Length: 146
Length: 192
Image (cartoon, rainbow over the protein chains, first blue to last red):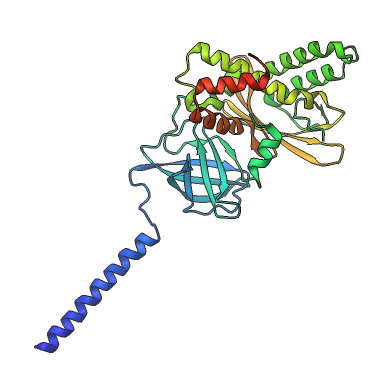
């Protein structure tokens, strides 16, 4: 009787361990179920600069979504991003690919526009900026600082 | 370094060009002829030359569209009077920033590398060949209105003018206010 209890105990412990491991794996891999209360937008960049699926989509420094997929379309990078429904993107927003720090990973930043037209699921962000090295320096040099 | 932005060059490319490209080419040629005009070379003609260049630029740049895009989410709350004030100052700023570079044109070649039209929006790719044989890629973004194609953004070396000012204006407005931005613009263009 004691041996059965022991084995049962060990068995249950193992199952609990595997379940915990499974849960941990899913959470750590950040595999949120896409399509859950959100929508997708596309953006075409002349160069993805090493952006990876799963990278952050950021507005005003706040992560609001994820890059769902990156495909080559007509020799350009077609990027699909997933956003929650509450985040509204105007049709004159600009999407750019930036680097975290100077040599960190790439992410997508969206600067909101002033248009009254809001993009719906499946539509495209028209104005995009491919990654540029030392972007701010060049920008200030080329266009001048206010 | 003479950084001629798009506005001052001669087309050297025989590529098939649609309406958007033609719209840009027409104004570009017009501005070049103003810059090269011998009758406007003297110092006392400077004011007139600047005015003519600005008038030509106004024919192709959609200033309301550009103003809305740079003020972005701050545009909606502004009254028509405030918007008008901003538009004029923004134009003054652009003029002040770029007019010397435009007038510094000295024969750089411009190659019209093609356009892409999608509905009412178009992209026109242009390469400017400097004297040192370096190529400066310029990308125009245009929107079709009733009166024709108008430019609402241009990117040089992949950096967008609208995005540049949108970010700067936003941070100034967030740090002070819309009035603060107006004051700063006035200061920069030398108006009271």
